[in-house]
Amino acid sequence: MSWPQPPPPPPSSLPPPGWYPDPSGQSTHRWWDGSTWTVHTGQPPSPEPGPPRRLMTTGGPVELSGWWRRFGGYVLDVVMIDAATYAVTRLIRNADVALRGPLAPGVYPMTPGAQAAVVASTLLIGLGYPLVLLRLRGQTVGMMAASVRAVDRLSGAPLTSPQAWRRVLAYFFLVTLWVQIGTVIGFNHVVGPTPVADTLLRLVGGLGLLVTALWPLHNPFVQTLQDKAAGTIVVRTRP
Image (tube, rainbow, N blue to C red):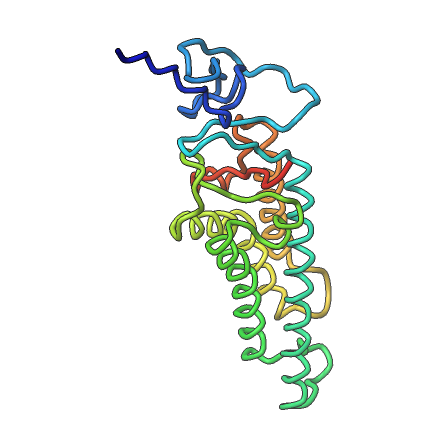
């Protein structure tokens, strides 16, 4: 005589029942009954103070990072990139002056070759730094400090190379490209008001930064525009 086997215990890794962002990507929320998604959907509930929002991916539940946590990590990354760019620019400028001597008054203090070296090094730092770390770890130094990581939105898996590229290039075209073009225009300007084109291009870059920075506040997956371009989300790595 064989006795019936007891039912397996419910998985402890599944999140509790509740309303979660719809995994299909819709702007509504869907009810999770503790083991599976139901057909019940509704508008996102009003934000309430409490623990970070949870999201179910095919690889398991994750906790979405809040806006302020991401902002803190971004500020640290900007400070590091700007410091590295400033140091490299100073080295190039000093080497340029040492090789050809100071130029006449009213002429920009760098030759075209030195200007090209500054642009190239700035792009290398600004693009290479996030690209390498996102591909290897899914997080920059600022994201490490903020205890967050970028992962695939559907599976929760680490970023692929195409995703890392799309994420970095999306930010480049939104912000960095316009600032760099403005910088090139400013290279040949020393005396008088700042060129209008330089100012306008920097404003375009600032507008792109503002839009992508505020986008997570109204996105169910707390995504920036570069997250949407790459199909990624940013999750907490520890409570």
